[in-house]
Amino acid sequence: MKLSNNERIGQCLTLLSQVLSPYVEEKMRLVYGNAWFSQVKQCISNKNNSNRSDEEILQDVSVLLSVINQRWDKVFKTYLSPERGLVNELIEVRNKWAHNNCFSADDTFRALDSIHRLLVKIGAEQQEKQVDVHKQSVLKLLIQEKYHSTQSNISQGDQKIREELKELLDIIPFQDPKLLLRALTHRSYMFENPNKTQGDNEQLEFLGDSVLQFLAGDYVYEKYFGEEEGTLTQKREKIVSNEALAIVAQDLNLGKWMKLGKGEQLTGGRTNPSLLSNTLEAVIGAYYKDSGIDAVWEWLKPMLEKLETIKIEANSYKILPDAINRFQEWAIIKHRQNPDYIVIQEFGDDHDKVFVMGVQVNGHVYGQGKAKNKRDAKKQAATQALKNLGLIDS
Image (cartoon, rainbow, N blue to C red; front, side):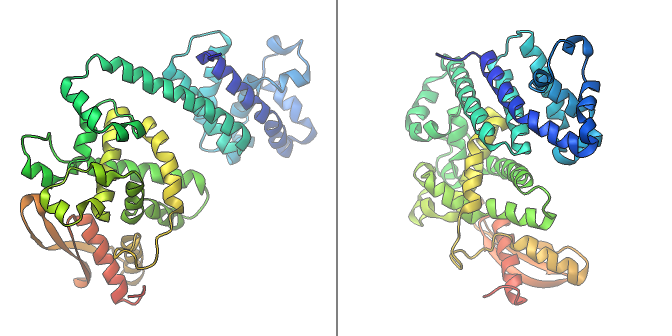
């Protein structure tokens, strides 16, 4: 039988209480010793708990959350920081649930996500997985609701795009298929077919790169909490590297869907790692504009986990993923300043530019790179600089 939103929240609050009961006791004992339970009672109202046994009190998720909140600085801050906001939010969720308030699908998803995040922070893997199942069910309902609410407004042109991109839309459920089509449109195609497009994907690529950097940063921060900044940066750079993104784009078969000009197609554009990674970033940016950050995170999280585990064979790509950061570290240590990247030359038509970038420190150029966008040209320049300094193998 299908669960209601209130029933889902109730089940997940029960899972949370199962974890919090021994967790709260353990952490309170570390500070208060055998007097820990008297401290618990100081945090709750005698009016509502005078006829309850100690065991019943410690099974009440409202009590447990209140104890965490009221003894935050003395006990729990060390273990749960910076998640105090989640605790306060869940106290409110529990109170609404206890008073039989109705929860919308959006409110339910947020509540389950907050429970899930707190369980992850505590390290309750089994309960976290059970709550995640509820989250995914609610997310599917949300997507279906939004999809059905927009069906009546879908134009004939939208329907044609949906039919053309059906396989991809089954994987990434865009509400507005035109955004996905634009994310797949390279500037070379727009230049050759100005009346068949609503713009190319370069702005969406820029947006997607920013979204990806943010979510990848949050992912490695949570997974490797406590690691040094340099370690976190290195892990994030691996995840968002062009090489790793290109491999994931190939797995999604993005090359099949890309809208390319004839020249790009003839020169192998559909399998070009740079074009594939750029297109994937554009798709991420488009999905963010279409459905918001929560939808992007749910779709992207498994991808981030995969990106982290991808092994790139040595010398299989010309660009070192973290070259910019590594050269910057060298420049700061040796010269106490950041390197400067300069455009030495740019050539080609407006729709097919090529940039030559140089990287210099104290006016001395250490390396050059050439690519169809400045970001890749910078990475090539930094890689060449590291090779010239003998810091990596040629």
